[in-house]
Amino acid sequence: MTWTQAINPLGNLGLSALVDALPIIFLFCALAIWRIKGHIAGLITLALALVLAMGVHGMPGNMAFLTALYGVMTGLFPIGWIVITAVFLYNLTVKTGQFEIIKDSIASITEDRRLQALLIAFSFGAFLEGAAGFGTPVAITAAMLAGLGFNPLYAAGICLIANTAPVAFGGIGIPIITAGTVTGIDAMAISQMVGRQLPFLSVFVPFWLVFIMAGWKGAIEVMPAILVSGVSFAVAQWFSSNYMTPMLPDILSSLVSIVALVFFLRVWKPKNVWRFADEPPATLKVKKHSAGAVLKAWSPFIVLTVLISDWGLKSVKAVLDKVSIKIVFSGLDKAIIAGGKPLAVVYNFNWLSAGGTAILIAAIISAMILRVGPGQFLEVFAKTLKDLRFALLTIASVLGFAFVANWSGMTPTLGKAFTVTGNFFPFVAPLLGWLGVVITGSDTSSNALFCKMQQITAEQIGVNPVLTVAANSSGGVAGKMISPQSLAVGAASTGLVGREGDLFRFTLPHSIFFTLIISVLTYLQAYVLSWMVPPLTMASKAVTTVQQVSGGTTILVATGIFIVILGLIASRQKGSLEALNGRRSA
Image (cartoon, rainbow, N blue to C red):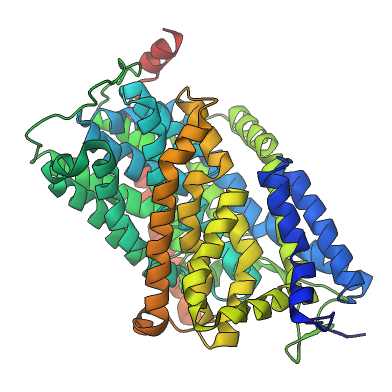
């Protein structure tokens, strides 16, 4: 039995698009106005999509529910698996006290507030976005700045604004992977396009942060440091997103930026140490640690970077994919006719080559280095699962909705309706991503909601869909700073609960300004700078060769040797846990 996807089922494009937009409108209202919890709003949205798919588009019930199941499974693996393992690795460093040393190693470098903003809000915040995501960057960096003596409003506002450039690749590349999952476009092609948009913003943001704090004169005084911070971040972001893997840009670019600025500050200092005129007394006690202790604390993320780099290589993937499991969805595989062709629906459970598995291996190796026992290891993992249960349910339900909307014809109908913007659509594309993140608080959710529509609309107007799909993610980064969730986190971490409105007014102009920069850039890349747009590449089955397997095996062996050496060196270092424990009890 086959069924042909129904586009414009009501015979009136405007009316069909309005009806098909109801689940998205409901989700926005549920989150922004009615303040319904994310997982409940996601489940209701999925239910509404199923009703419309069957009742309006005529999708057979068994196909609709199988499509929802496929989306839910995709949301849990590989996307949810990355979320679980990334947060788990971060939680391990917190549980063992090593994260305190990491924070100290950053906060103790300089007393100049402008340079602290660059190191903590921009670079360290990007590192946290790549390693954990889910509000962690703003919560930790804003609390650090406030503890160092920053005006609380500036501490929260600056960290919210700084948390822009890394958001598109946040949480080990989850937004990009999600965009590729819902569109069928190779995630690496999307990563390359985002890596040719955001580096321009990454160079600009450090200057803008200091300008907000200290004005034009204050920014000029530390311009060398601003350039080192922004340019090193942007170059690493461009290189890793274009030539490595979408899972790595945040972590690699943030580490490069931190290291570059730290070494630069050893040979250059500003003439004046700048502070706020009315800043409160510092409450955060910063301790200096030995180089060995710092290496040990950072070692989990060094291991993570190495493994993620390996997992992104085709030769390594060819080795690891030999044990993947493919599940054919009977009753759905080649049963839906879309664009005149039957859809192949095969769920690829590539449990070993999945990015989340690389992170789990990094966590296991880190546990050995940090001397975490099996009991504590399992305890932290269980707590991570418990803390993330509702977030995982939200991701699963949103992905379920996305696939139902895509395969029933709802998303193609909305995409066709957006063609009314004509050649102006590339300018509008980032605004859709911005709106999605403002409401949902997540670039991942925004990509799940809008990327298929971005793809279809671009194809209708003759623009490379890689550009508009990437623009959805790039535009979304500027919406993060004014989303209700981000404002709540920023206010809570700096003692500004009840003043979320002040934070909103502080960040709103910057959010709009950054979005317009991305919109103008996207428009230019569509029609003037089209050479910057990578060719459209659809995700496909990789052809494994003997040479790839041999090369991948060699790389894995070399990686193993490197990690053993790093582990031996790091595990021999004495940490400062006694001092940390004393600081906590004080």
